[in-house]
Every structure is written in C-alpha cells, then in structure tokens.
Amino acid sequence: MTKIERLTEQTIFHLANGQVLRLGMAPEKLQALLNRIPEIPGIDLSQPPETQPEIFYSPFMARSVWDVVWPLVRTHRQIQKAFRGHPTLEAIARLSYDELRQLPLEVYVSGPFGLYLNHPFNFICRRAIPTLPDGVNEYLGQFRERDYFVRVFINLRTQSVNVEQEHLT
Image (tube, rainbow, N blue to C red; front, side, top):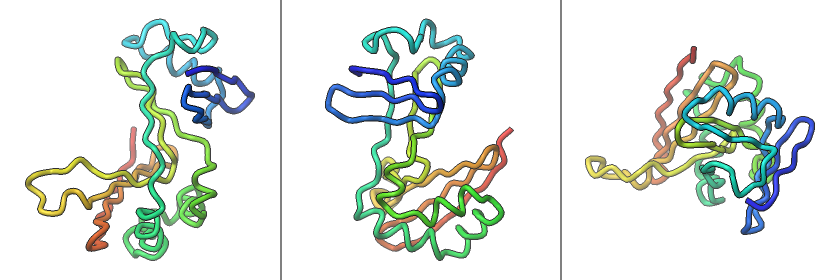
C-alpha cells in the first residue's frame, strides 16, 4: 500500500501495483472496528501504509462469469424469492457489470488475520473439492443486507442454483 485516503464516508487504499480499493466505510468507523479486535494489535490508519495489516481482497468476477450468473440472479425463482423485501439486494441485482465494479467494497475484520475486502455483488470460484465431480465450476456469491445473509451457489457449466439464507445475530 502506498497511500491511504481518509474521506468523510470512505477509506481509499492505493496499492503499489496502481490498483485503488475504495471501501464504503468512513475511516473513523473502520478504525473503531479495527480497535474492537484484540487479536489485531496496533492497527492505526493514521500511520504510514507500510505498517498496515494483511489485506485480503477478492477480485471482481470475470465478465465470462458475469455472463452466466447475471441472467440467473435476475430471473431464478429461488434467488428472487431470497432477495424479495430487501431493497439493497433487489437493487444490486439490477446493476450492470460496470456499475457493480464501481460500488465501494465491503469491509470485514477478522482477528488475527486482518482486513477482508469484498465486492457487494461478486461470484468467486469455490475451492475445487475432489468429492464433487464438477467442483471447479461451482461459484459462490454472498450477499448481505444488515443482518440478513444470502449465499447463492451456481454451477457455471450446468447453471444449477442453490440458495441459502440466514439472519445473523
């Protein structure tokens, strides 16, 4: 990390490779969240970037993945039912690929590991599971609106869908 911008409603990390990670959280809120995790001592966003913890970032899905999952997310009965009544999830499912890429990243802090940054709408390949005959084609999308959490599993080859929902406490 070469620079940290502290804006009113966002924190922006500039990486050495030129990539910019825009977090949808004010620096003060992020610092307060970091301070609550005793396993991650000494993280101070006001310090130079080279003193920062590990940052785990899941890159945005390739357009080829988007081409398969987007029509399913927009039309699949189970997914639409899981998103119904949750305005953020309903709205995000209507955005284009480029609009989704521009959304601020969501932040998760996990001690003792560091910061996890995710796109609010993203499908990532699950780790290949030897017991699954088609494990490399299984993609997972995780969506959250406050305490409501939805996991959507899509097989890119077969286009089969599995949806799990839960309320976090």
